[in-house]
Image (cartoon, rainbow, N blue to C red; front, side, top):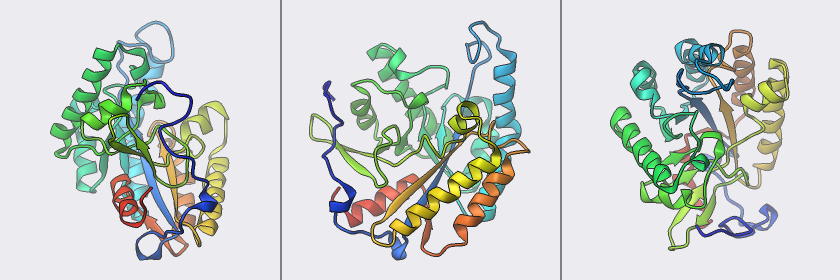
Length: 287
């Protein structure tokens, strides 16, 4: 898209929209996004010099141990993850892909590595990164990704066009709404912003706000309670963003288990993936 002062979508206050509900009358579509990422030991992670053994090791713990704890909890409560996947991980941790495929998880593009952001690249490098990410995930998982979450939620003016060029239908970088939002590209194509969260996200919760696991659990439950109540009259989407090296720690994983138990104790909850939400939205809304 061309540089502009506002987002590429129309103004639409939620209290003025046509009332919609999810399949089977569900009030809230809950999607869970494990950010399964690859950090290279020979690139900077948390320190300016390499190797950053501490920064690398804790993240590699997430890929060796933590992600499988998340899988067990999601299995217990009937959720399929919609993974924000660094495509470099496919080469280094193929077992994660095998386990996710066995569970019917969905794979979104999430750059090649989490140490390289799109807005730090030249236009040519950005185009190559998006293309390579989509191609590698398609080959490595057996299915082309329909969704995208930029590493660090970073984009350039050209990112949405590049994503559309490579078959991406929804993007989670734009945390603007509780429903999917159609975004119009300059050439008339449409890509959807899928509700994501920088609030219900273990990375800012634990690393920036220094929340306890109990705090994070309560925040998830309170957010759900509000959206579930509002969803009686207007369908809502709730996103829970997770990182295996954070929520996957032994002293934190119970918070996720308890929060999902609370959610699943309610009726009219749809355990969905990103693509399922978008497909349903296209059926019930023109937005």
